[in-house]
Image (cartoon, each protein chain N blue to C red):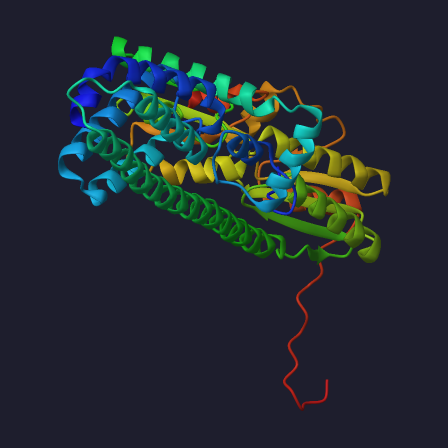
Length: 289
Length: 130
């Protein structure tokens, strides 16, 4: 068998490359055509090694290695068929006996059986690993998304506080994406109607940088507030946020802006015509007021 | 973009037609439908991937050190990271599943990163340094 392999090595290599080309699409895409020649040489080197050692484990390992490189089962079967065809079709040289020819075919058959075992095992391992990988990636994303949503819900739980008659304060912290902006708008409008508010202070002191997206969302909310007959006041704008608004030339017409909550509250009191109430007199429990 | 494993996903579909297994049953069913209309889709996908591998192997031989890959999909089935293990590569996609898996795959390779970015908003991509 070894003699046969050495004798027609280049022919066999050409045949294997041809088989690899014909079956290219049956391999995984990890095996590009420009590597077919190297694969053919690796296959023949392993076969030659097997001819000397007859070690099925070594041939099996070769099969696993070829599977890892992307060689498909169908292609290996086609290679086996081609090699068998070459082995049977090779005219026996004068010195070769019938037993030698039989040994060549049986050796080839044994080699292919072990390689196919290796290919199959390698394929199974690859399938399991890749499917596990994608599943765990999906689970991790879901876990991350849930964590983000939990945090967002916590942030959304920030109450809209009535500080005086007809004056509300909405303190905002953290990121404002489209979903949160929508919820803020809904809650603000609900509370304005519910509390019959005339002014709402939107306090963005807790937002270091107001993104353009968030600024746009707040301006839309402010416009909606005005449609309900109330006045929005934006307070606590950071220098970075102010720059975002200025750079993007966002329309602030009609929106009162104050530096901080205190000034905003003073402005709100003027706009609403309200006056601060005196603190209620504390009455001990059980006493008659 | 939402993550939904009950609906087919283009990145996983592409992985499947390339011979990969980073996909779900719903993706494989979608491929079966696609093949009814475009039976040569796997050949086209492979040709595309083999071209990428050919380019990557040449870049490797020439010592290319920086690669920006746009709309990377799943970095599997013989992607740039396989052919250019020493290069600085920035992969990107707008799909969170592809990004998450890519980040997992590239763990231990600080010079190769995968970020979520959308070409329609290129600032994030251009500001990122791999």
